[in-house]
Length: 95
Image (cartoon, rainbow, N blue to C red; front, side):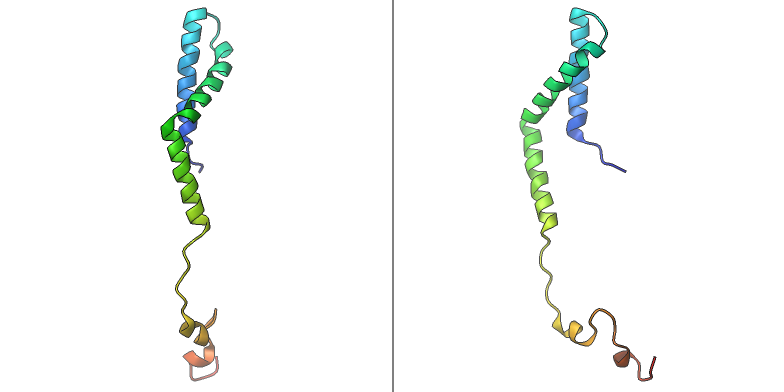
């Protein structure tokens, strides 16, 4: 399931509000105004300081996830087990 885009939600709400105001002022169907209203709403949402701060935080989060912290080395386990347990160590009989 995809996650909702909060910036798209803000833009769509603002666009419909602008389109309704345009329809009330000049008349005609609302679909005449929605295209320009969407363009203006996206400009406003992208310029809004909170959304730019959120974009910066998300970029930092993606960078941290793509470069995970190094794990502590455990040479003693690798020496005996490797990826799969060595059967000779775990059982006295042949398996």
